[in-house]
Length: 250
Ligand code: E4P
Image (cartoon, rainbow, N blue to C red; front, side, top):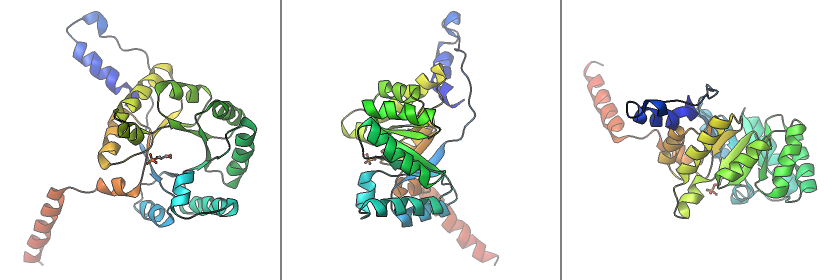
């Protein structure tokens, strides 16, 4: 259902105008619920999101690791292990090598840490080649730093489990990042690619809602935008009134 949204909308708009155009392509429908990952290496925030009961996984990157002061190879490895102990879901661990051999060696070691580790590989030539190698060898990957539909097609062809389009960074450069999610969702639906769209570089609660509408399979977000989904002033006003009235019959 998810990736057929825009196709069905278009079909509905055309209904009656031109009967011959009211034809939906044959699409393999997938039944999915959008997953929530947290995009941080901050253990307290990971625990807080996990305690909410809605967390499906974690994404990290070298910048997020540096932000929480994790330094040195051993510390990074230990940090991934700790995250795997907290969250029962896919944990993306990013390689820092940029050549095929280095990416494969690094990725194999990361994947061996825990069954839930997904090796995060950059969208570069050797990265695509490495993703294919990992796919052929049963190691799941998350293709990161994706900014175009063409890159998303390559990642899917190589067999990436996840593709990470960075919508916030596209917004930052003056374009509509969310459009890329819709475009990839449509292409994957039409072509039947199994790669899951992991919307990344989330800046706001509204981004999360837009990603759900556009057909993302996963949204990875910092804690703030996730908690922002809870908020509505009418909820606060309504609750205050209910609690006040409850005192009347207490
Ligand atoms: C996640 O996998 C990405 O590395 C992350 O969402 C990037 O976010 P940023 O653009 O806020 O750095």
